[in-house]
Image (cartoon, rainbow, N blue to C red; front, side):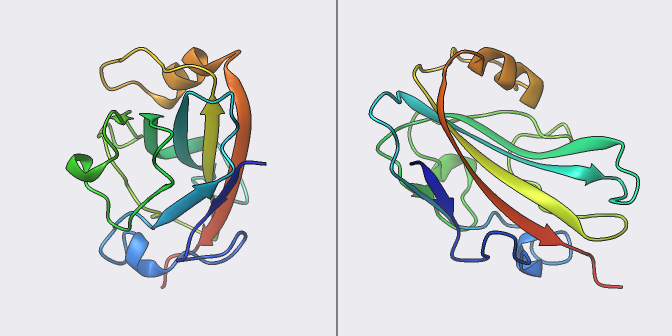
Length: 157
């Protein structure tokens, strides 16, 4: 079974400030295991379904979109730059209209940040700055496994 973990926080645990807008806003280290044999590529999507207020969520804010991650990659190091991504990995656009990682920065309350790793039975065609929705559309019918790691964060006041 596909698994996704981080040495920076546990599933359901608090994301350290260094990975957020309160800190240096770098990507956390991620590691995965047990990729299914049918898989041909991986997709990573990090989003926050509690935006803008967990008491009255109105949207899911997208923090990071990576696709066509090669199978020989077993994770991503802390503060991975676009140049240091595994060869072949492509980036989508987050909700700041940028490619790359944008850390938690909740305006109010404690938010949940879902790190979802998808194993696909195909390699997606290259797209120019695709959104999460475009990646999800392209993934339809190709997902063979999903792993999820959820971290939480609330800005210090």
